Image (cartoon, rainbow, N blue to C red; front, side, top):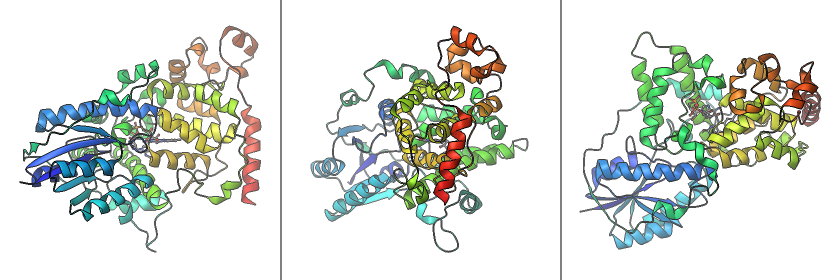
Length: 469
Ligand SMILES: Cc1cc2nc3c(=O)[nH]c(=O)nc-3n(C[C@H](O)[C@H](O)[C@H](O)COP(=O)(O)OP(=O)(O)OC[C@H]3O[C@@H](n4cnc5c(N)ncnc54)[C@H](O)[C@@H]3O)c2cc1C
C-alpha cells in the first residue's frame, strides 16, 4: 500500500495531467492538495476571483470522476507538505512544473528537502509543448528571436496521446480549509460581470476550445485583429491556470486538419500564437529578470515621466482617446482585453504618456484574469521596444489610425465607451478633429485627449534616438 500526494498548482484539471495520472497509476491512495501561497498563487485581484471558481470546479470534478477529495490549505508549502507526509505515511509527492523564477527556486528547495527525508518526488511537464531548456540554437545558446525559435519547435510539433486515468486509488482525507475562508472574491462589486463572460474550470476551457474551433479557427489570421468580432479563442486564462493543456489544444487542431476544407493558414497562425506563449516562457526561464529589467540595457537610461495623474487616466479609461479608453474599460469590466487593443494601450502608455512599461505591466497583472508573468512581461517589453525581438522603437502606434483600421465602424468603442454612442463613424475615433468639435464636447461627458499624439510621437522618437547614441 503506498500513498501519494498530488500537489496542484497551475494545472487545475483532471485530463492530460501527468502528475495526477502517474500518482493514480502507481499508488493505492492519493491526496490531491492545493496550497494557497499568497506570494505565488495569483498575480492580482482579478486572478484571485478566477482561482476561487477554478478550485471549486476542480474540487467537484475530482469528487465526481475519481472520488478524490481536494484538500485546501494555506501557508508555506514545505511546512504543509512535511506535516501531511508524517501524518498520513506518504511515500511520494507529484507535481507539474511551473516556470516563474521564484517558483522554480521554491520548488527546487522543496524537492531537495523532501528527497532528504526519503520521499519519492516527481515533477512533470504539464503546461508547455517544449521544456525551455530543451531548445537551443546552433551555438548552444538560447534563441533571442521568435522566428528561428519557432521554426525549430514547429518542426517537431506532434501531440502525444491523451492520458486516461483508469486506476481508481482511494482518497486520503485530511483537514481542509473552505475556499470561502481564503476570501479570494473582491469585496467591492467589481467582478460582477466576470461570471457573465467566463466559466473558470476544465469544462469551461473545453467549451471555449470547441466553440473557437467551430466558429473562428477558419479565418483566424485576419479576424483575430478586430476587437469587435471576438474571433480569438479566449483560452488565455484557462491556459494560465492549466485548465487545459497546450497538448490537448494541439490534439484538437490536428484532428481539424484531417478535414481537407480546413483553413491551414488560420491554423498555422493560431499555432504560432501558442508558440509566442512558449517563447515567452522560454525567455522568462533564460532571463529571470524579464519582469523587472529591460532586456535591452540601452533602455535603462530612458527618461520616463511617470506622471501619476496621467497613469490614473489611463487606468480608468479616461485618456480622451476612444480606442484606448475602450480597451482599458473592457479590462476593468471583464478582466480581459483584446490583443490588438493591448498593443495599442501599451504603446500609448509608454510612447505617448512616457510611463514606464513596468507600471503598465503591474496594472495588467492586477486586473487581467489571464495575468501571466511570462506572457505579460515579454509582451510589455516587446511593445515598449526594449524586449527580445521587440517591435522597433520607431514603431509608434497612432491610436487614431489603429482605431480606424481595426474598429472601422466604432462597434468596439461604442460597446465600452457609451458616452460616444451618438457619434457618427467618421468622428468617433477622434472627436476633437471634427469641425464641430466644441459642440460635440459640450454634449458628451467625455474628456478631450490628455496628450497630443503628433507631439508626443516626435518627443518619443527624440528620446529613443538619444538612447541609441
Ligand atoms: C501588453 C500586453 C500584455 C499581455 N499580457 C498577457 C498576459 O498577462 N497573459 C497572457 O496570457 N497574454 C498576454 N498578452 C498576450 C495576448 O494579448 C493574450 O494572450 C491574448 O490576447 C489572449 O487572448 P486569446 O486567448 O483569445 O488569444 P488567441 O489569439 O486565441 O491565442 C491563443 C493563445 O496563444 C497565447 N498567445 C496569444 N498571443 C500571445 C502573445 N502575444 N504572447 C504570448 N502568448 C500569446 C495565449 O496563451 C492565447 O490564449 C499580452 C499582450 C500584450 C500586448
